[in-house]
Length: 239
Image 1: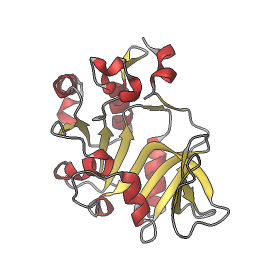
Image 2: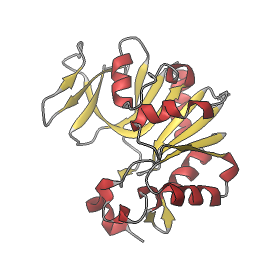
Image 3: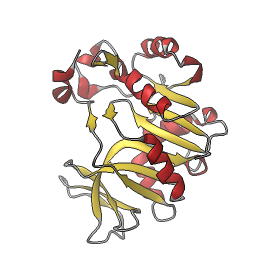
């Protein structure tokens, strides 16, 4: 794949689900098996061949900046400083647009995700299918699902099974309900269409663009995957 790829690591969140661990540090600096979530995610992105990684920061920004400057690949890390206020996912990505450079693709990763997913295969899938965005998804139990058309894996809606809320006007009865893994790829041309608003969710952005853009699901049920952003799920793994 001859594409220039920049990584984007979402690490600015308050980490409220990991409290009390995040009372004295950002969730990105919580340790798992002797290594911070930040280093786990950075190593994952760099191993996929990205040229640089943008990391957004907000909670305990000085601690984050110190950790990022101490990383072995610090020269290839760009810090997007959101300490003034959190801009949510799409808003944070748009705010960091000056750091995208001449990249063709943006590889996005949540800092509280642990997975052995092959990011190179995800990137190849995105390119081979001429997608505007590709979302890593799994068949797992959750409250909120992305909905995809069978066969072509095109995003067509979103559903909250607890509240019954659904977004999408043309959702087929047989649509696949799949849970988002917090890992996705965007073509930079598509990412530049994110509205320039102070706060914006990437979920809302994808859903608003689904009728006019190629937004695909990449199902990776055979990979190991864990969201460790919740204290009740994480406490037994602390090192």
